[in-house]
Image (cartoon, rainbow, N blue to C red):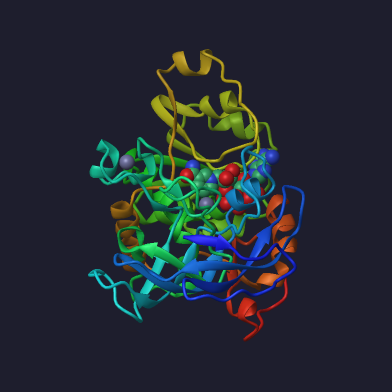
Length: 374
Ligand code: NAP
Ligand code: ZN
Ligand code: ZN
């Protein structure tokens, strides 16, 4: 999909018939700040579309990977997997999209297409491994993928989503990861009327969980570190809001929830949260802290409780989520920033100081405009 044409911060341009020089921001190494780079996107092949990227959300996973907190990062890295934009060119065999269509790209841009999971629409669980939008290699095994902190991207039409007309492209961008990451487990574990659902952590993922859980008819409780975000949580649809810094919270809510979705990006005591589940309740882990989390047997065996995990969603389910959000008037609460503020934004995300997702206005990379400072 992309060939690197220059190292970050040199920002030299190389042109050729095969490569479309593309302005981007990249991390050169794990400890490096992100800076400008020019990458090459190929001209779209028969089944691919070229997308003009207008917006890209900043997911905490971008930070984990750019800082190599999960190990195995590939540098230079152009992060970004919450992409919205407009199709600017379509390959000769493309049937699903045409030039001018509003589209999105999420966390993966390809998969094996023949395993049982790919065939059943769960490409995120591809048995041969999905192709991540960045920090991965294409299916040729060698070409690095580069993500959405860039002005354009080339993607196979089968891995592109349609953005419904009712959704603004900036506030829709984080749906492509944060939205689907919460929608998928809420649907799978049947959140709805009569179900007590807790969302742990009111960040990018968490705030989507509150909105979607509420729209599904569940009783939604936010478990946040403090009460600072309480008014926001209630406005988003939370029925209850508790501070986890208050030990009474864990006494009061013991055995209360059918479902807990844990979006926290750092290590927390899973046993303590599991004890808040009813008999047969499930805590779904979607947050991905750096290290391992110890789990004791007692909180699980006592009430036949489960701890499960869930990762984003397949293409079909992601489209379903976008249509659901458009129908229920759900979008993300965003702070729009120019790309030059990305390093500052990373620091604020790490401090849980984001309301509730940073979205990069890609005009700032083209030098065509600015966004409010953060
Ligand atoms: P985020 O915006 O930073 O939100 C995480 C929230 O967790 C914070 O806002 C904060 O909420 C809470 N939190 C942070 N540190 C904490 C601590 N030490 N103790 C307790 N709570 C803490 O991040 P995000 O983009 O939503 O992503 C969250 C995690 O999910 C990341 O690890 C990310 O990599 C992962 N992720 C997973 C998937 C998947 O498919 N499973 C997809 C995307 C992202 P409060 O201020 O309310 O306490
Ligand atoms: Zn993400
Ligand atoms: Zn597969």
